[in-house]
Image (cartoon, one colour):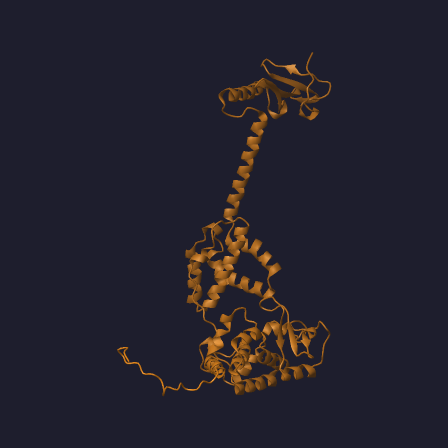
Length: 427
């Protein structure tokens, strides 16, 4: 009587069929009741064998899948031989597991090779830039895309990431400097490459450190040196006012409160606290909320302006939206006064940011200590404020004089009755 099989119907254990022996020991089959392979009924083959005295039976497959009694016998022999010699797999389950593992390894290797083919431009367009657009300001994204198109892509855009070396970065640097670009531009361009590379590293596209780390960045000294005198500032504000009342107001705020252009453009009427003479600054360069303090002239200016709704922008462009950049009327006013005539050093030229620089310079000239200036300017570190130290020439000397004034006055020592000791130590 044939032993009942535990095989499922879908694996050959069809209903109302019996296991049939073959001419090969340990190989048997069952026929499908209806399905045929050629003129014969489709057969499902299994093999039976003992491992360490335990009888095992494993299904192989159908005739329609290519299995025959002879192939089944060969598979059974391989398993028995592996058990005897200790080499190879000792069950079909183990063989399938190894095959699955090899398949997984092959897929990973194929994925790795595909990743290695991805070019720097492809990764920038498909991965980096979409991520950047969700976390960076629109102006920053536009600037990065422009730099990539003009300077990065021509040299390394079509190269696979793994093929990019410090040599290529040096070439980009040379191209920028040969074109007369400032060291700050080189620094910014290399920073974009580094950020793209680090993103690629996070996506397991590369494993090495960014090649920019092995490239020396030109020293940058773009600190504004020149600031406006009171007479120059008065003349400039007047020239601006003739051209644009709004630009005049924006310029006056920067000069009297030390605000950056972007900070002024972000102001809403909710940020203008007239009673406290305070301007709330949101979305600053550091990302933190800060405050700036009004002068009486700034307070009066705001009082005369028609007040808008709570969340309405104080200054708007012609379409009623946020202003993106300072009007070129500022440059025209500077040129009309010939403030930049004959000046080639960009650090000496008067630009809108010079108003903020002038604000800090006037503070120091008025005797305000550098620590306070740092807080008013919202500098992230003291080094940024130290550039104004030369304007407070008497600060250190005055500090010593102040200390000296607190030392109690002493009368000169009375030496009339003092005993004189000879040089040889004898009286």
